[in-house]
Amino acid sequence: MSGIPADTGQRDILRTLLYYDIWAYPLSAQEILRFFPGRPPSPSELSGHLDRCKASGLIGEAEGYYFVRGRTEEAVELRRRNARRAAVMWKAATFSASVIKTFPFIRAVFVSGELSKDVSSPDGDIDFLILTEPGRLWIARSLLTLFKKVFLLNSKKFFCLNYFVSADECELDCRNIFAATEIAHLKPLYNADLFRRYIAANRWIRSFFPGFTFTLNGPARVSNRRSVLQRLFEAPFRLVDADRLDDMLMGVMQRVWARRYPQYDEAARNRIFRSTKSESRAYCGDFESRILTLYEERLREFGVAD
Image (cartoon, rainbow, N blue to C red; front, side, top):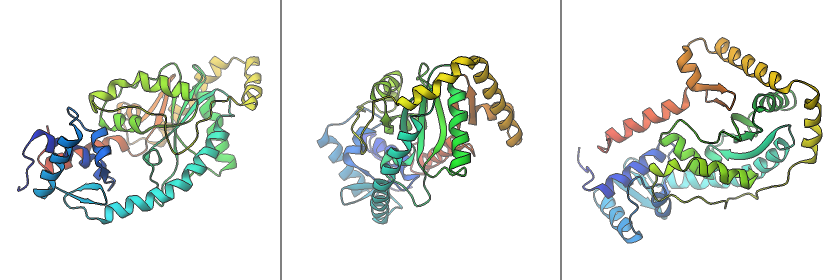
């Protein structure tokens, strides 16, 4: 294959662009530097690497955005269209977060998925990562899911609840480029202090992006005030055995996953639909594995696989 990258800097640029190319998402030079997988180059060094990549035909550039060979300027226009749509979706996300934070035992609300990258496709939804009171994750999850099913007719457009984590177990044990990228793009909408704690617990992502720096700056204002309604809604749970209730709800969901997805063995089901006392994660269709497989295929295609 012609156009094999000549040095480590070019290889690292390609490795960065190829991951985002899965979504036809071109990057600016600043974004490439932020997610650079090797030793972060100086701006002048990066500029030189980019110029050599363009000269060899490995990448293209338009309006300050870079994309891999095979893409065109249309990828830049697509990102701009999706960014304009995202500006509207952020308003919806802020409203949804204001509702979510009133539910019992919700302690923080972050935006993940494509909206956290400031884009929204026409059929996209709003993905939330929600942190809960320890030992109450399944109560919180069940109440929010019931609300979505009854009042939102199970629509996930503005209320996608696929990831819950206990506030005392913030560190992810699954460490790969997919998880690292999602954490790096998280945007808080409720509880900045807990967001900082979550990020501090997952500083391992710098093993993937050594030059990465965290910031609270985002397109939406972060609320830190706990809801008065939430305090009222939590009061009745003092009258029941909440520990036992939480365990029961977790067991119910584990059985639901087993019945709903019999095509997966137990090991695969536990990976795709994480259901523990401190974590509930459901990426239907084994989304994470599919992305990692696609990425490896693209790395091999461009001759930059490990």
